Structure formats: structure tokens, C-alpha cells
Image (cartoon, rainbow over all chains, first blue to last red; front, side, top):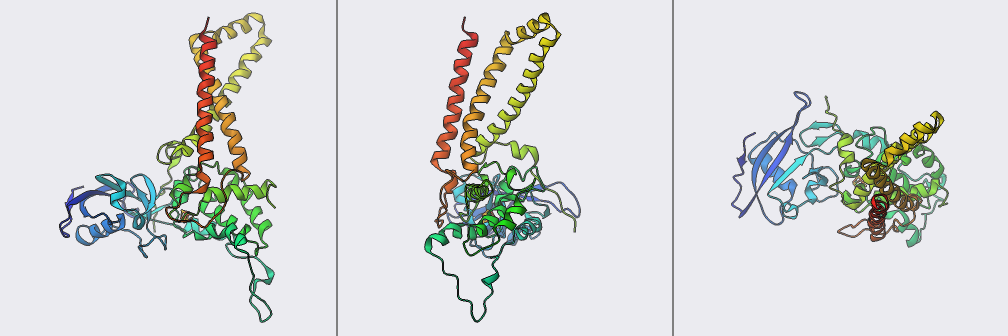
Length: 248
Length: 143
Ligand code: SF4
């Protein structure tokens, strides 16, 4: 496709932004459209895409919301690696060409937008809530007190924003469409490690299946791409510790 | 609404780049596992040839005395050593040992599970496998 130049204010530096475009309604193959975009030290990949969308090609489909790595909407493949577009600066990529593609291992809705429904349903399968008969707030219930150490056990894993980058980087997800995936398994650990929760056995039963936790081979790619420091690889190995009887 | 499947497939799974030494070790572990399985099948076939008499057994043994045979055996030594050494690291990691402790993450969010201990173990497994292969080469190709 033809290369276009952004008319936004002059900047000393420009980058070639290659955007993968596809529309499953009309065709199946992805094509790259190239745009020359000015950028500054602080320009994010999302800023550049929105610049293209505003000035050069209104049809580019991209999902975004908070622009501050809190909502997890703008996950995509940036120069071959899954990342949040709002959390990746053009300047830190050290490249004159930035290629953005939809995340792998999710069905494409259009251009850079993928369908996260599969991830949300495996997430729900993990029962992502505290299971405890006494957890309902009534006149007689008091709050559950936890020590700082008890909170440390799970707080890291509760930072997950469901962006789906970990599932996109996972080598098992690349070939096994039924694998639960690092996002869901980490959320299972988040609740299992919470001392207020009483649903450990229920969750361990759900993940102890042929496409469950045993398919993780600790490649660690999930943890390397996670934008919130959740470290799914650690959570999954700890969770396996429960199943193998090393943790109680 | 139609969707396009976008699973990375074997190509993405087998690509050892992009994610550092941990992904390389994942890839080596899979490849060496498959290699050792192939060797085991070949080895069973080779040793079972003794049932067909001494001459068949001798001719089968001759195959391992060729240059190609020596190269294959050297590769088997390397695969075996790497798979064992890295496998021990993984057995501990899979039990939740050596993968770090949960903490409140701070920017730039370096994952604790991808720690130096694990990286050193991977490099050591590769190093020991290389040394074992060199020793194997010197024994097999020495006079
Ligand atoms: S674990 Fe990290 S990468 Fe995975 S969905 Fe949650 S925030 Fe995103």
C-alpha cells in the first residue's frame, strides 16, 4: 500500500509505521499500510496510530481507552512482541520502522482489534472471587484482617488488567487452543494464595486437567511481556507447588 | 460477525528469539526431548538386531563406527546432558522452588521468576552439554 505523510506539526524525527490491516468480513489475508509519522521522545505507539487515524486513514481499527496502561485495551504485537501500545514509546524501540499487528492467539475482529472473549471465559472459569461462606457482609460480619505478609502472597497477581499479552506470548497457546493460558492460571493462583479464600480445592480441580496447568513448560515469555509486573510464570509454578503437595 | 483465527502455530512456538534465554531453553528442551526419543527408538531397533544373529548385529554396530555415526552419538551426548541438567532446574521450578517470592511489583517490573539463578542454570546446562560433546568428540574421533 502507498506510504503517506502525517500533516501534524513538524518534528525533527519521523518513523515509518506499518499497520496490519485486515477485515474478516471481506478477506482473510492481512496487508500492511505504511505511514510516515513524526514523533517526539514521549510519543507512544498508540499516539502514532491515532495520528494516522486522525490525519491519514480514518479506517484503521484500534481499541483503546485509558492511555495509561490501566484498562488493558490496546494490546498488540509491536515489532514482533506483544505490548501495550499506550505503554510503548516509539523512541525506546530504537528502530526507524515500527510494525504493529494484532496479538497472536486471539481471533481478529479487524485490523489491530482482537476478540478477547476466549480469555474472559477462561478467566471466569477460575472463579475469580473470594469463596468463603462467611464473606457476605451482614450486620454481624466484620472485615477480614490480613497481615502485610498475607497480602504480599497474592497482591502482585491481583494487578492483572486482562490485557491478554501473556496469552499472546505463550508458546503453548500458540498451538493448543484449549489451553487455559497464563492469564487464567495466574488468577487461579491469586485466589488460592489468598488466606481469606476457601475455594482452593475447587480451583485445583479445574486446572488439573489435560489442557490445564501441566501444559505450562515455564518458558517465561508471559512474564517478560506483562506490563503490570504480574509475573504469571511465577504464579503458575507456585500453583503447581500446591498440586504437587509442596505447598499446603 | 466473522473472525480470523490468528494462532501463531508451530512456527511461533518454535521461534527461540524475541523472549531471551528462557525461551531458548524452552526450545532446546523440546528439541532435545524429541531428539532423545528418536535416539531411543533407533537404539531399541539397533540392539534388537541381535535377535537376527551375530552378522546382522556386527553390521549394525559398524554403522556407529562411521563418521556420521560418531557425529550422531556426539549430538546424543549433548542432548542428553542438556536435557538432564536443564530438567533438574525445571523440576525444582515446577514445584515452585527458585522462582522468586511474590512482592509488590515496581516499575520497570523485572519478573522475579526470570531471575539470575535460573539464567545461570540455563547457561551452565548449555556449557556442560558443550563440554560433554567435546569430550565425546575427542573419544570417538581419537585414535
Ligand atoms: S497477567 Fe499481565 S499480561 Fe497477562 S493479562 Fe494480566 S496484566 Fe496482561
